[in-house]
Length: 147
Image (cartoon, rainbow, N blue to C red; front, top):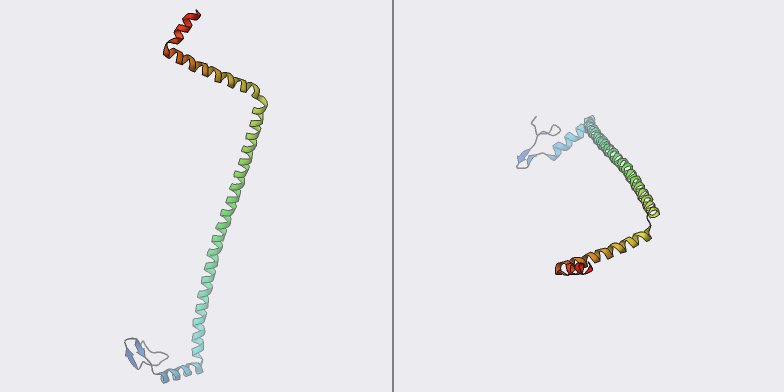
């Protein structure tokens, strides 16, 4: 029997596409296989193998998906934990800032502060005028006249 035999039937001819079989011979061989029960036994054997492969593939995909889903859950839990910490730190900093501003407002006398700012502005203006007089030489003449 050659390597191209199909259900025990030898090819009639060969062409560029491969072996060619006589349809009558194939039909007789197939009916013979079915009558003896070996055709269906072989098909069931191949189907069982294919089924086992399919089950293995589905179980592998399921395991990989479960692993990825678990990683995603861990990442989400980690994100939630860090965001809670950050939110707490922000609330704490806002409370401290608010308390600090209240303390400054209680201890600082803004009326006096406003007066000090006005005096400092007037002193700065006077210093600028004196500097301009000194550049022109008039400051020394005024100082001499006051003595």
